[in-house]
Image 1 (cartoon, rainbow, N blue to C red):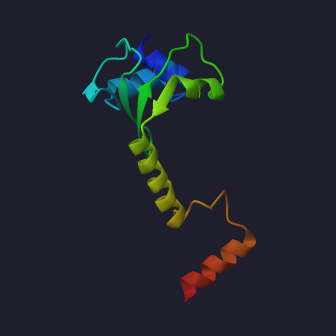
Image 2: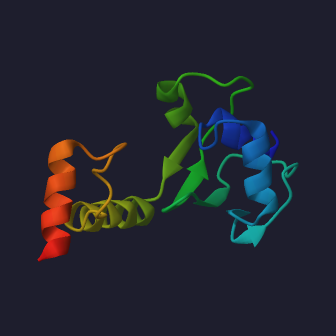
Image 3: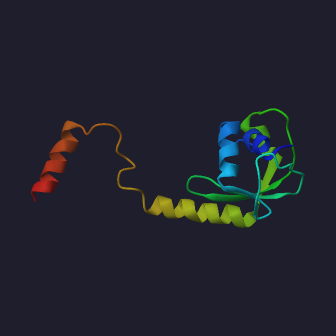
Length: 122
């Protein structure tokens, strides 16, 4: 099965086009080597996938010709223990130090504006 199609079926990317662009951009490597989207995968291949803010290492465990629900897509790969540990540590660090504007949604309310003006004034 093609690498870009497998990434789409395993639900790492929403579309095959996004998967193909990620492979072309060097964000997906097979066995540590940058490859093309048409690379044929086989069971046991080690993939390094860089997503927005995390890197995942998975071993190909199976194939599916169609995109199936997430519960079935998880059966197509096995994440390496080291990768799972790194992702858990990164999530814990993000929970301890949230981004300052993570809670901001839309325009500030009247109460928020008053608090901002008090803060700015002194």
